Length: 543
Image (cartoon, rainbow, N blue to C red; front, side, top):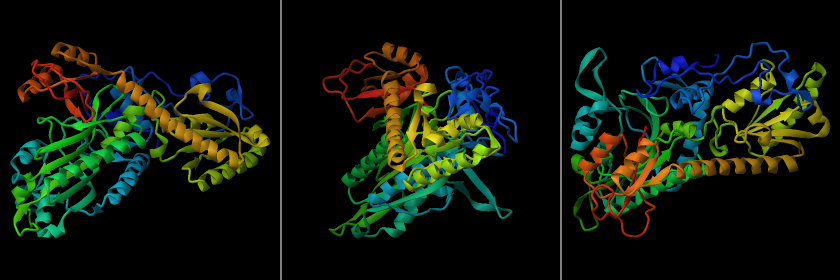
């Protein structure tokens, strides 16, 4: 299949009304198959750049078009999703097909989180996708919060169903139905499970990975004997999400508590990790809910305590979804495409052999294969692109588009010298290219590993710098409005009412993203009312 094209994606995923789709003018390839800034006459690996584009190819190099981020962020995002081969559109409006490379990123997220869930005593299981509508109705705030997004099944096997079924929007209701059958005594607690599943929410305005009718996620559900245990669990899981975001995805999220208005339907408290995207909008990247006894009372989920008394259990639920893939794209990507942190990159290193003459092919490919095996044996995720169908320049372009952290180039001169050329994805052009790195495993392996660690740290540092330079401390409503108008996040003391919070949303389009766990010391005055405030809140426009 050829490269995806923006019109296909934009025809199915609705862009925000304020976004104007401008012409895609940034052409990724010159006729020689290289970036324009690299197309001068110079030698790399014994082959002249100007000559590489003349190497024979069995198929034409097609231009890959990327709209500059600064010109149209939404169009840029769709271009990257398409050209990096992360997703395609499904036949139902607002759905997507996650392609292998996009799914591989999701698998890296799964791999890390799954190990952390099991380390903290959780077991994987699976609940049905179809939920009786009566279950949703049992918890009043839950049905009110989800009703507009529900997908319902009313006919099955050609007959109208006696009770309509909800296609899973989340699983608190069916989980409680089953917990009621499994939990009888304090000896059955805590009960801690997780499922990897799909979810359906009938969104009106969609964006691939970020907001689709159907998406993938993990959702954890736990039941406890005391409120203290439930609160400890909810905080533990948001901490796991925070560490994942920083250590694996290199996204410097801000962890905190949601306001009452933004709390999950049916929860007592919602904790969140909020990430700043490249357009400075906030992305709710993961949540952990302390459900209190709201669902256990609705479903009668009780246990007999050590004193022989019947008690309702205290519960939590928590989730991260494929939305996080969108967050990675929008945090680190640039005009060249995707840029992946090494810790979650499906391919950490790509090897591109370069040869001009037929008699050079065997020795260059032999060296490339040897380097490939050396790196694989060291546990590095490496890909050897030895296809004859594309030029080296096209391959450089393609793998940069896919965000591979390091590229190794091997040409005839490199083989002669026993060395390779290494380019970093996060440092474009000559500055990111190093010549003469020995092929000897004792040199190459530690060099590659060190560079991967450097890139991981560099991406996090750049994201932190971007985030911190776009958060404004405010002390009045006028200052808040000015900050939001500039597209920034506003951070200020808040103790105002729900009605005043709604006023901010209606007048600025921004919401309280969270009350951060990390709070400044000292006395505070609410930016809206002038009353005493105990906490600062962060306001921002969001996805």
